[in-house]
Structures are given as structure tokens and as C-alpha cells.
Length: 82
Image 1 (tube, helix red, strand yellow):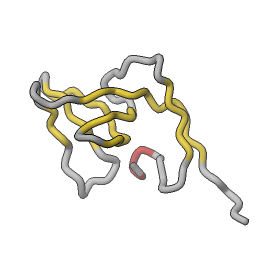
Image 2 (tube, rainbow, N blue to C red; image 1 turned 90 degrees about the vertical axis):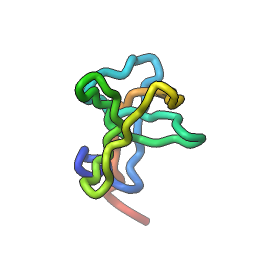
Image 3 (cartoon, rainbow, N blue to C red; image 1 turned 60 degrees about the vertical axis):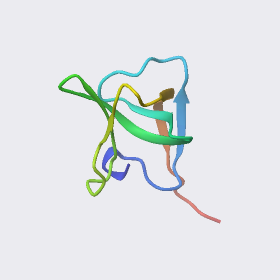
Image 4 (cartoon, one colour; image 1 turned 180 degrees about the vertical axis):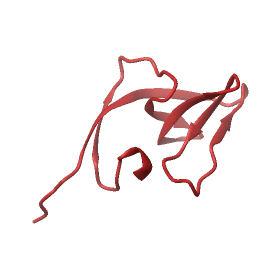
């Protein structure tokens, strides 16, 4: 998710009251696990996009069960380590 400004170890604030819209960064429950991806509508098809260009978008079909757990509203990065 580095291309979206989210780095390993960052803390995310996820608002579960928001509805995901095109382009939002979301936390989803998919295929038995949580993922953080970009919610993208492409030609009427839902895609879950990674912030890493080496990973292809996940095409979500009607048979797939995707639950939006929430929309990422903030990310925090630790600047000083002890």
C-alpha cells in the first residue's frame, strides 16, 4: 500500500460507519482474511487494488463474498523508535 501512502507498521483508523466509494482505501474481509485495498469500480466490475504495482488487481465476481469491514480514514507512522 506504499503507493497509497501506507507503509509497513503504520497504524490505521478504520471507520466502520462509512460506505465504501470508488477510490476509497478499505479494510475488507475476503477469502477468510482481512486485507487493506483500494475499492475500485472499473467498467462496472469491482476490483480490489493493491498499492504495489507488482500485484495485479483482484477482480471480484458475483460469486465472491467480500465484506467491507470499514473505510480507512487516517494512517499514522511512528517517527521515533525505542
